[in-house]
Amino acid sequence: MAVAVATGQSESLDRDGLLLWRDSAKLAPQGLVEGMHDLTALGGVWVRILVGLGAITALLFQRMRQEAVLLAGTIISGWLLNTALKLAVSRPRPSIVPHLTQASGHSFPSGHSFNSALVYIAIALTFAAISQQRRVRWTLIGSAIVLSWGIAFSRVWLGVHYPSDVLAGWLGGAGWAFMASAVLHKPALPRLTPGI
Image (cartoon, rainbow, N blue to C red; front, top):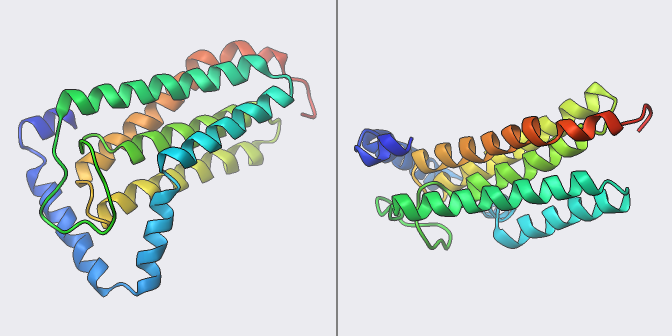
């Protein structure tokens, strides 16, 4: 996606995507607009910090220090990666349509999309790993994916990101969470006991 943005190959997707969702926003009832503001707020910095700290605290209360440290490391390293990508690309925010919410900083990749996918999916994967029930694992992971994708979608709908920003952000954050889980959480798995 970074190459497509840098070479201008994403221009038509970005323009058409923004205009499509802005046309639908004009026809939307006021309640939907407020709902999009609420949804995008779930990907805000302070909400992500509080949710992440809550999950880490819950793990520490369960005496799962290794899992807590790995979750914190996953979130912090992902945040650093997203920040580095934003600085490297330095893409300005879209000006094709008026913004329906306040936004600042660079546009690519979407910080809301990257970090909400990272935080919610990493937490879901961490807690799924300590459950013996497949339904619980799938529910946790599926809910995190749906929630983070909704947050990413809201950024385009509100006009503060191009579609390529949120696609790259969501894939980057989700990919980082899954990769970290696959690489880092293996040592913790043998410690599980049935019935937890």
